[in-house]
Amino acid sequence: MSFGRRQLPGISPDLQRKPGFGFGRSGVPRLESAAPSAPAPLTNTSPSGSGSEAATPPASANGVSVDRMFEILDPIIKKTFPPGDSRRKSTAELSSEIDNIIREQTRQLNVQLNELERRDLLTVFLNDLLTKEEEEQATPSKGKARAKQSTSKETISEAKNKLQPLLMEHIDAAAASEMERGELAEQISEIVSELMVQQKINLNLKEQRDLVTMLLNDMLGLGPLEPLLQDEAITDIMVNGPSQVYVERGGRLELTDVKFRDQSHLMNICTRIVSAIGRRVDESTPLCDARLKDGSRVNIIIPPLAIDGASISIRKFAKRKITLDRMIESNSISPQMSTVLKIAAASRLNILISGGTGSGKTTMLNALSRLIDPGERVVTIEDAAELQLQQPHVVRLETRPPNLEGHGEITMRDLVKNALRMRPDRIILGEVRGGEALDVLQAMNTGHDGSMCTLHANRPREALVRLENMVSMGSVNLPTKAIRAQIASAVDLIVQVSRMRDGVRRVQAVTEVVGMEGDVITTQDLFVFEFEGEDDNGKLRGKFRSTGVRPHFLPKAEYFGLQRALLEAM
Image (cartoon, one colour):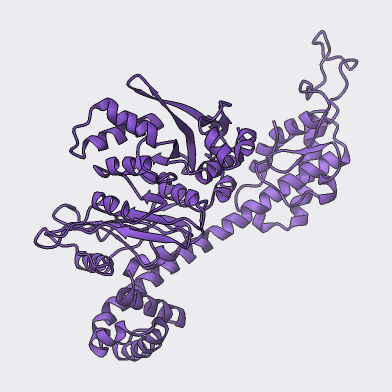
């Protein structure tokens, strides 16, 4: 057992570099022996138990006995120096008293410590006392800083609520909306300074800048949501009414202190989001899919459907382009898996990306689409455009909701049918949800190899079942065997992605569709993720295992000159 609890700065770097020394959790040197040995006794005993002096010699201070000494001395040191007592003594006084305790206890227990081991014990206990003292002194300061920050936010919020109506009386809203943000900020700052004097509001320069920023966000941006949109660590923003805003950071949900003034303020933000792309959200149309200027996907649902107030769900647009190589760095896939997926995309396989909500389906689709030849014509079809294709020849199509009279709706299926007349080399669907699945399969089977799409499913086999059900939703009375035969001939590869309980998104399986056996679609796994356990930080451990089977799409890879690379990756 290693003694100590934290890495301590008191250990000499020269000592740390000496061969034969290891370090426990605390960073304290621990002499490593070539073979494990039993703990040495702390007192001399004779074989007969008589306590004769001719018995076993005193324990030599090896790594085990030093650890034992720490366990014995630790409660004595804590009792001798209670919390706060060490503040009244100098470091030299503490060091001298601790050294005396160590010498006295080792003498009583008849344990021999060499000078180096005694000094290390002294260093551990001294640093432990000093570190605790620093923590106790810092805790009140941190509390005061948090309280001061909270008070500052409340002060700025109160000033904003008081000055905003007055500000709107002093400016031309139409002219302000056409100005650049920087120019508008300068003018608003001047007006705010005058209004603060009139209203006898005292703010320092930083608080005044924060106030102007909040006012600008309300006028031009998305109000309280703007700081969350600027935070690159946040991937999702979930607004549950005016008083509750959650974010996803590092794969974990956390409640923020962001709030809207009231329901009306929240509704104004909803209207601003949807009106920017020519859509609307009101009682007659309480549901809406939209996107922000940066491409972030937005879903809005308002009362009467949302009982506790309008709900906004924002899937943020990643500013940093995600590639398969970066997925390797984040342990989402293995290098071999990445190679196979690159070959699959380059070999124009029809790929289905399957996964649950927030599992990274669109991210994977974007990463695979980067491997498309720049000379190909690509047509993308989405409910709310969010794909980030890098090719020069891309046509982006987006569905349209019905108008107030219930007419003019353009569905995903309408766009898929129209895309077939646009001479595409590949068709990419953001998500297959309904009857358009039949049109997608027909496109894949009629010369549009290399098409890709996503759908919601928990396993590759469930993805095929869902695809079959969605084809049936297309009001086409096809026999089950015919639908399955069409799926088997159209889909080449299923990439199953998953957001696991540690928040990390991983590729759970890469599964190949082989063909049909009777009425059943046959598949084979090329790669699977095998769970092995959990580390001390709560991260899941596992490995991406290749099944070693011969890929069914090997002839296609050979056609593109990639056969050897594929076999090496498997």
